[in-house]
Length: 490
Image 1 (cartoon, one colour):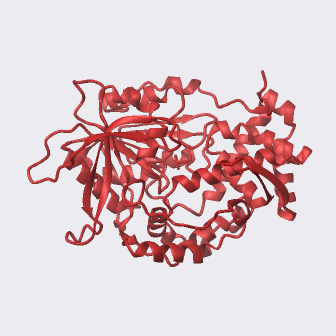
Image 2 (cartoon, one colour):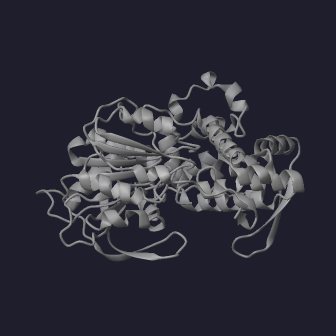
Image 3 (cartoon, helix red, strand yellow):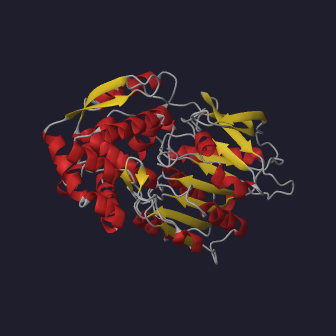
């Protein structure tokens, strides 16, 4: 879940110092930050920061941004904190930290961690859409994105100007919070969509940016949407080929790619009846498992290596034993996790303003899309969903190339289905002081990979990528493939 939402949040806090004269201050009080699943709570200092919803109308509607600081352990802490920026777009920085706090423990020894829920997410005037998917299993095949998004637009527009929830506005909020907390320079961690926010902040506020950690990198010049299905297919192909080259996996399943294509073709022709247990009550739910359900499982299981480790087994059981329960249960987990994590109104305001207007439907590579399990449906639904959504504020240079003196650490998974390493390689060209780390067999988001916490802490401490020791990442391996439901081979 932390890597999906690795598609994951703007978390950051700074050492609480004196702000500039005339700069609004943020009053912070002791608080507890809860894990999304209430598995733990973290002591912090929390407050709200009021800003104009439309920055050009200072006396217009005001919204409150939720800010939290997790204080450094050292009393002699560094003056530059680490801000965390979540992905999505649409997820919460606070949720990112509470579900992934461990990897930041080394940084927190000497630096505050600052968490700012980006406007429209978490506790910062969250923009939720009620898509009325009580039975997500059956209704997953009956999505009418146009009418559902128009209803969401109309509901949210009663209390929000949906044009004001874009990256270009968010970086202004971020810098206002930096000033209010009294920091001269900050470090930023951005995951997935958060890498776009972090890079745009560095573009707009270079003197305030000390370092960037970009995890699952989006190149600023890139338009998201047209290649998502193709990138997802390539990642799946890499995972299944990795199984074929693994002695235990190849022995157990012989040809996982053949299983994939057989299952995809059979479900396209005819759905099968599957059963899962409802998470809250345990009651059985019977539903038609279709090619669309399969595509969702294949895509989201590819996000991280522990879910990917189940794919060859799940495909094999479905094809050779007509046992669809493992695949159906994976769908159940992903569907409910996404529904709870994302503020879809904010997601729409970003996607429909920054990417979709730049997609030319007539120029889509439909032949390549048709060869994927996702097909053209994803990008077509994105275009349909955005047809009637208000177009927001977008800086003219959001997608422009740029050059920066800021030190940057770029992290990629070799099997990432949404931001493959090539995207980070392109983004790296903007930075003279940079290091790109690619971790074999891993998917989207490297935050939880062993030793990455040491690399991040060393990078921030040095303030430079020059001479950064990343040799430990070359020794990492993904989760072994499950050869039975009991687990990997001995």
